[in-house]
Each structure stands twice: as structure tokens, then as C-alpha cells.
Image (cartoon, rainbow, N blue to C red; front, side):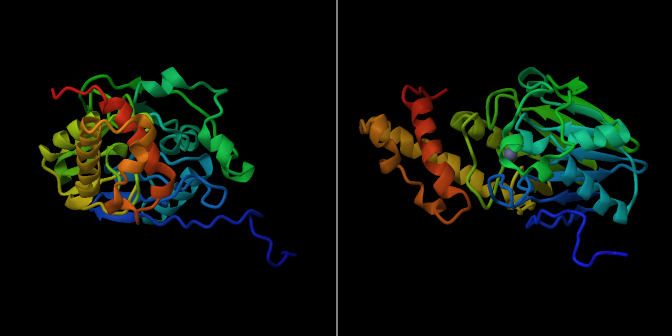
Length: 300
Ligand SMILES: [Zn+2]
């Protein structure tokens, strides 16, 4: 006899995975504009599925085994295909721990940033392991990237071509990758682009972010998929561009005026962004780090 009210999980998470259709062959799961919490179960980053005909290729894999499994179940309702390949855009664990599900289920090939193999091993207790509930992180494990990307690579799966493009300098992290699908002009921008929330630039560079924005602006795309954020249109880059342009300009002005490190976060507030998610949590740190980076900056 079924026991009424007993769900498969006794832990209530407040997220719902629904794929957003981007174009004919691309769907994305767009995570909440939050830090990882027990409530959101790590559903706070974006990952996407591209249907290549007989397979799916993924760009990032979500934060946990459990989220990846739920995403795959949702995609199977649209079309049930194996996941042959996953491209991991950068080393932050909210973007790739979910690969452990696909590796187990499909032995998917993992292609990605070399820093994943360099900085983590099976015993690493990354952020997600610390911040999520035991239930949310169960079955999740750290697995190696099969192929590290060090230069531009063209990958063809079935009939769809993917260009994997390393940024080549520190931007959001020390090694971020763009993924471009020429056939439908879709650009997956990794965490170099976010919207609706403040970025975390703790591993990044203001100058590198701005160079990466320039790279994006030279590309021909119809859809731009941010690492976090719901805007996947051509305009998806606007907030990132404005944030780092103003951050650079204002911090350099403050350096000129000899505002010291101790006062920089009081002096540079980035008020245009105060209603964006995670402003309170991340903005001051970004300003402080920008000061450290730009204090002795000479224009290139
Ligand atoms: Zn991220």
C-alpha cells in the first residue's frame, strides 16, 4: 500500500528544472540567480543540451549528479538520446560536478578546461560538497576531464560542428572556454557573461573580462548563453560589459585620487547594479580585487 504524502525525497528543494528552448537544436537549464544553498540544491548555474542528430552534446553539466539526472529526464521527454560529449567551460564546480551522472550513464567524453584535472582530485571537497545537503550532493563525484583544451579545437558530432575557443588569458577564471555552434550562430560564453546578478571575480581579472567581452563582440551570434542569467539574446552581454567598464574606470579614477585600499569599497559602489542579485554578497569583494589588480595598472 502506498503511503500518502511520502515522496521519493524527504528533502524539499525549491527549484524546478525546465529546459528553455534556445533554437531548433539547443535547450538550456537556467539556474537560479543565487549562491549555492540547501534550498536550491546547487541549481544556480546554466547548462545546455545540443541535439546533434543521434546524440546530445552538453555545454557544462550542472552542479550535482542529482541535477544532471533530473535534467536528462526532462530532455528525454523531448527526445531520448545518449550524451556523447560534454564540454566544460571552466573549473568552478557548479558547472561540472554533474558530469559524474553522464559519465556513469553514458561514459560521455569530457572535454574542457585543463584546470579541472590540475586543481581537483577524487578527494577534493569542493564548494558544493560543503554547501549542499547530503541528499542534494549524493552520488556526485569528481571525475577527470578526458581531453584538455589548450588551443582552438573544432569538434564534429554527427552533423553539428562545435568550435571550442580558449580565451587565452585570465578572465572569469585562469582558463575559460567559449563554445560556438556556427550552424545556428549560438555562442556559449561561460561565466565570462552573466546577467541579472553580480559576478564573482575572485579568480578573475577586470582587464581579462574586458578583453573577453571584445572577443565576443567580434563574433557573429544570434544567441549568447551566459554562465548564469536568463537573458540568452544578443543583449545578454550588456550588463557584463557595463559592469566591468565602469568598474575599471572608477577604480582607476580612485587610484588617481589616491583613495587607499582601506576606503576603496566605500568610494566605488557600482550603484547601477544594486538591485541585481548577489550585489550585497559579491560587489564589494569585486571592487576590492579590482583595486588590487589596477593599483599599478598601465594601459596595454
Ligand atoms: Zn559559475
